[in-house]
Image (cartoon, rainbow, N blue to C red):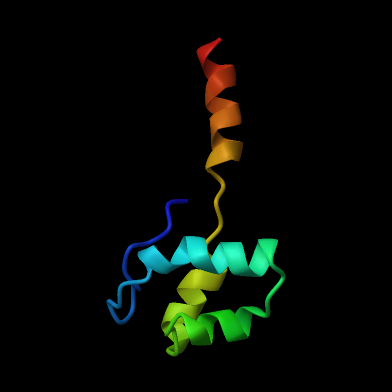
Length: 69
């Protein structure tokens, strides 16, 4: 999945904050709630978009390489 550029519900720009969110939560181990607050994502719809985004492109590419052979 490509991270959405804007929130589907309210239209707020969120795509530029995704890498920072992942870096701080996965690599540094910070609390996701505190990270979302510091990034300015206060609406539930924007938080949902950020937390539910999942990068599965690597899994899909594994299947496409098998089809080419």
